[in-house]
Length: 196
Image (cartoon, rainbow, N blue to C red; front, side, top):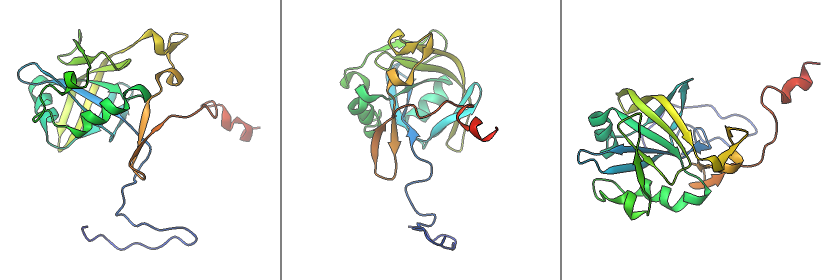
């Protein structure tokens, strides 16, 4: 490990310092899909991702085939790994498209070209964001979402229902995937008990 700046222990707690696997967890398991130079679909799992602005997302990426594809096409799609696709999604994170160019087919998945951006939609993921690259610099990808599409099976009253989507998250502390749990409160409502 690299030497780090000294830190002070917080009394009454286990102190880990800055050298640890857990920074912010859980993390969404997002699937980034692109076309390569031969128009073959490629998909990778990225755990360091989140919403950047109302219509933008941000993903931290190292240099690999996906970044080459992003520079080539300027577009990508984002889907979300779910309980039904744990093995396939993990496979997409384990194997490089440089070594296994047909990894999407090898996982038994199919694609449809996005009608909005130059990227594939992975049909086996029921929720997809179609995105244009806003910037890709120093390993940070910012994308503008131009469309979100969802299978009817994951909708309730016309809205995406996470209980039906069943997305998984990455737990860096235990190096596992976890299912998103039950609803425990309403946003902008649960805290109202303190406003009375």
